[in-house]
Length: 326
Image (cartoon, rainbow, N blue to C red; front, top):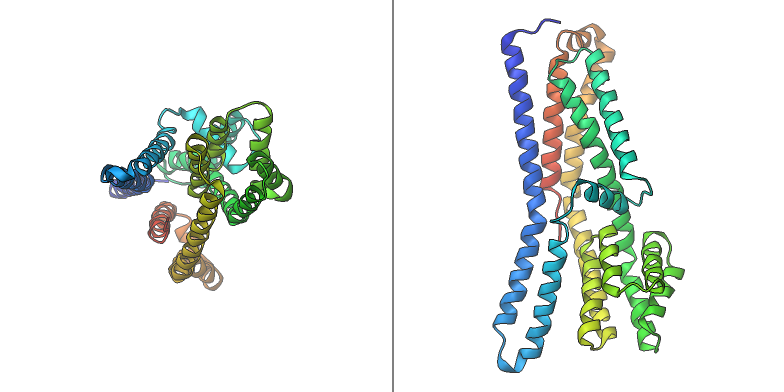
């Protein structure tokens, strides 16, 4: 299939534009958690530095919390590619080797590249299809699985903290309260607390257990819980009251998330309709005038791939615009 020079230049420019927009959006999205964490650390540090002489104990406690937050935020900086893949598999709840995931991703990329090549796509679209299949699709699938698992964990986490609080107030040790959670709760919540209990039986320290658990469930709610346990172990205090306050905070966060979900439902519906509209129109045109659509999939096949790429970038940007994290 012959492609004129202006069309080829336009195709290359479109692909470059899509890559620039996609990479820029991912960088901005990736920087958001770091910016929020830095603001929280700065806020805690400012409160600690402005305390009076009578509040030195509270300032020291806030300083310990600040150090814990810095440690949690800096854990991922030294991770290599294999550690990141292993962490993604753990968060998704998959018990497979990273090498198997890499081979499967490369195989999917080769398949998509071969399909694009034999479908008559322009040459720049073939490596783009390989990149999407080898890197984009597995990352999206693992991300969705991890998010679903974390949402399932968080939905019952406040109830688990209430059980721990009641157990402590009734005189049970913290280890026995954690064992109750591992026995009574199912799904990701029961699995994670079972691993925590098993780690204690193996003689691991609480800090080591929580660091491993945070790699599997890196949610803000679970980070709060881990910080509370570590600070209480170092400084003492009334753990039941602290966990009770934490449970209330988690419920407030859940109510806020539900409110955001309700307010953003209209925008999400609009994005879904806009994304599905071109395919619906294409289907109706195929029924009314198949010969007219056949030209698009023949001589104008490169326009199809350009349109799909631009639609993908648009849907990604719209999704990030209505994705609110608290």
